[in-house]
Image 1 (tube, rainbow, N blue to C red):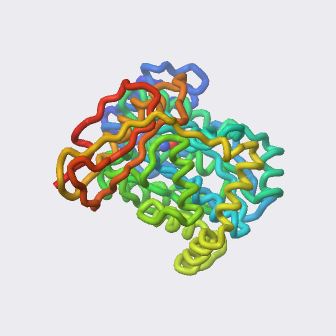
Image 2 (image 1 turned 135 degrees about the vertical axis):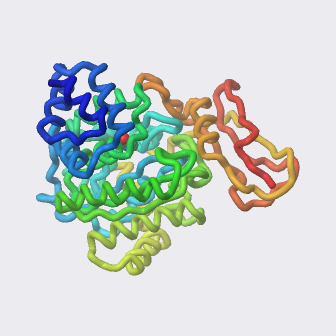
Length: 406
Ligand code: URA
C-alpha cells in the first residue's frame, strides 16, 4: 500500500526495490497522486536513503525511458555533466577541444530553468543553430564534423522529468540522494562508457560546501561504476561566477575568446582540466599528457575551427551573434581590492535582465547579460566600472553587496 510505503520512509526505514518501484512507477502511470509523491519526497529529503535504495531508484528512473547505444557505432565516448552554475559555459569550449583531437562527442543538454539559461539556450543564441537534431542528423554530424551539441532526442529518464518538476515545487531539490539519482539515471541512459562529473559548490551551486559536493561526487561515481562505467569527478568553486560573461550570447562570446586563445584565467583553466580528463579517459593516457594535447588544440586554432564546423553543421551563423547595444556601467564607490563577487547575486541580477527563465514558459532574451570588468583579486578605484550590464529595459535592481571590496 502506498500509504504504508510513505510511512516507512517517514520512520526512517529502508525501502525495498519492489516498494520503490510500486510508488515511483505508480506515479509515472498516474496511479500515485502528486500529494502522495510530495510526501514521500519530503520524507526522503529528511530521512535520506541508503546506498542500495539509491542504486535501485537510479535503475527505476533509468528504465523509465530509452537507453542510447551510440558507442556501438562510434567507439568509446566520454560524456560530461556539470551540476550547473552561474556563467558555466564549459561545454562550448570542451566539446570542440576534445572533438578536434579525433574523439567523437555527442553532447546532449537540457534547457535551463534557472538564473542564466542552460547550454541549449546559449547555443540557440547563435542565429539558425538547431538543437533538435534527429538520430540520423546526430549520426551524420559525427561522421561529418566529429561532434554534435544538441538537445535530448529521446525520452531519457522521463520519470526524472516528472519528479524534478515536483521536487522544484516542494522544496525537495536539495536532497543529495535525489540529486544523485536524477543526474546518474540520465547520464547512464545516454550510454557513454566514460563519464566526467563537474560538481560545483558554493553560493551559486546546488550544494553549499566542498564536503557536500565531494559526498555527492563519490556517490555518483559509485553508481556509475556499478554499471561498469568509468567515472571521474572534479569539484569546482561556484561562490564566484565562472569567467567574465553571464548571459547567453555573451557566454558564447567568452567561449570564443577562450578558444581563440584571447582569454586566460580560472574559466579557461577549468575547461582545460575537464577536457584533459575526458581525453585521458578515452585515449587511456595520463592527465598531464592529455593537458598538453588540450592546450595545443587551442594554440593551433584546431579547437576554434572545430567550434565553427559544429556550429555550421547545425545551421548556425556565428557572424549574426548579437548582444544588446543598450548598456549600463556599474561603478565602484570604494577603493580597494575585490575580495568576492557573489555568484547568487549575479545570477539573480542576470535573471532580472531576462537572461534566464523562472518557469518553463518564460522566453529568454539571448542578447542581455553581464560582463564582469573586474574579477576577484583586482584592485579598484572609486569610479572604476565593476560590471557592464547589457539590457533591454530598466527593470533591474543591483544589490550593492554583490562586490565585496576591502
Ligand atoms: N541536475 C539534475 O539533473 N538533477 C538534479 O536533481 C539536480 C541537478
